[in-house]
Length: 489
Ligand code: SF4
Ligand code: SF4
Image: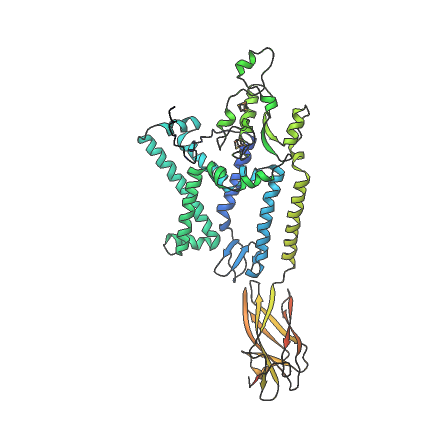
């Protein structure tokens, strides 16, 4: 018996190029609208201005890493308030679950950056090479002047879009007009050039060449979503009970017994699919639910005089009902089911909590750190002195006068490095610059014989907006298990 000839097989199937046909319809128009909105938001946001006064940047959305601030219109987030950013990220994550529960993979089909940029690049393909058939002809054609010119032009447009995309990203991290000037003058930070180079390369490669492979092989989200889908999830569904057995229009007309279904096997649903799949084979991980096959099939059904919706959004539950003869449930009704409401409840609760925390937050803060070594000093007049480093935080975009007062410890007075002990009192006032944490050394002395005990400091803003903060701390004195040294400050 002859040994079988070994056949070399690769680990991965070679990519079959996808040339999606242009299509018009309600879902295509929805995709246009979402593409216009998302790209406008991405490219234009860094150019929006927001007046925060003379002491803060006037860029509406800015991640100011150098000064450790995040500005978003009227909101300014400090590093200590990172929980707001964490809350927003959690909301974004739950928002994705919510969208998946309500409308399936709508994020993938309409708003994911990979989808939006791939769609944009596919329109560049059509603009330069023509629609599906012309693209396929050019792809097969040998390299010649026309192909070189068209490929050169197309890739240059890809590159321009990619560069613009990378360039827009860095503007979220610095004042956009200044950064553009510095960038072209060669004076921007090296990290700005590196970031633009990396993002240009990624956009060019992912949007221009990887395309559906990112969705099918690289992105984890389709796998996560698959685990989240159930019989109530809205999917793009081919109604095989209505479409099968499929046959051409001619064969259907010639069939007096009407044994054929509504699908005329025109392949238009496959031709328009940006991931190149055939939805008639059932739900697949490659289906990003962009619904362009619905547009294509609805158009075909209109042309052959059959009801639309052979391919449509449907849940597995509703598909089974429809197959049994019930009319299709309106899409809006299918969105609202218990899991969607649970996600919506969690998402809204976090949003409400963040809004409440934002509204209730103080725009000033007092933090105190006591000297530990030594915990107190005996001064030459017999009084006992403790020292602290205060941090006076002013989160407003203007300087503010703050009065710091001492509570408790009768007879005690305090002073700072700048005012001196001769001006010691129960309170002092300090001007804190805009948007700043001002460190201040504070000394408190209590008369001879004072014992250790609890004290507190309050900081109150001396303007009409007001606001105050209070911190409790401890005053150490001889006899409390510590010892100190003589000093006259
Ligand atoms: S577009 Fe509609 S009719 Fe044409 S092959 Fe697809 S499902 Fe069948
Ligand atoms: S099968 Fe239809 S919905 Fe799914 S990706 Fe292709 S065109 Fe979009």
